[in-house]
Length: 460
Image 1 (cartoon, rainbow, N blue to C red):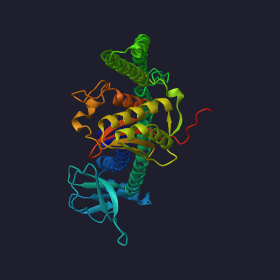
Image 2 (cartoon, rainbow, N blue to C red):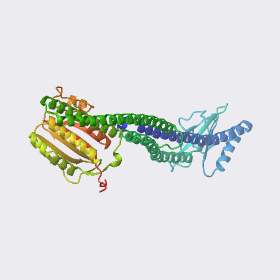
Image 3 (spheres, one colour):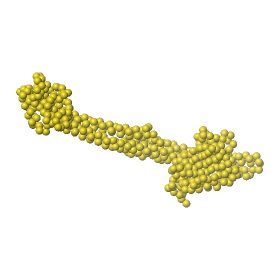
């Protein structure tokens, strides 16, 4: 199971998501800051321009002229968007639309927002205004300002729009992050599938290249080149081992024929015993060669093209009948527990060889009962061979799967030590696994193979 917190892909997706959200926040924050400052600056410029105009009149014609200018400006502003107040040196109100100098307002305010109520508007709520103030050399005070409620309302609309943009950006950024992760997963999936196929013996499988020339294509090219080299080495090794095994098999077969002929013609008991032992050793050597060849071919994926539907229950019952007489001679009972309808795609002869080896092992090393069973687990079929013998200690089960592994230290029972390794190789050929377990008492060998309800029947 993938651990999300440690997944590089999902970390990358999270980084993409966070970077996009950060970019959106920075961009919208900059827009908000620039817009707010621009609106605020425009309102301040209105108030400053009004102050400068009245101050110029005051400097040119005195306080009475300045008062007249204030009154003129107020009369020319029926909407009442401007505020003005001129206070004489003696504290007398000269002109303006504010009743008194606002509390808390200094004499030289450069820009400040404050809620004020103009003269004659006692029935209304105070309005937010931006004001500037100045003090002339003789103590005359002038306050000018501009109603900024519309600007504040615009700022509220802008903030709501920006919040909406951020909320919209979140799912879009999430979608972009998921899409980025999916693209990377798709490119990596091709590599993983190829590695899995090669691992199960499909040495001709190669990574599909997109042709973009990016780093994934570069990685795919390098891996494909490596697989070409490995495939060539495996082919060469298989040719050598196949040739060696074939060359050995022919003289061994001829030697066995000679020994068999000598055995029929011999009358001396000691010679007969020696020849029978030589024949047994020759048969063992031939079986070892056959098993070694079968393992080599299974690991190379040879035989997969001959897979057809195999009814596991019917196959187990066939082997029960086949080994029935031998088991009866040894005092062993073979039972089958498998429902009908369990189909796998398999090479019947190769899979039958595996079952034969496992039953042989159970007869050699097990007790007086062998259970052949099969069951479905999800998309897999588990084929189990269980005996009630001494079993294999857990710490020696890995060793038991090695080629030529002989756990019988005294080696008083004949065998090549290839049965379990062959079963493991064939399970791998089928895309499955082999597991050794404890039957308490005894050994349980479990072949877990992919089920295929759509498998085709073999040609008749």
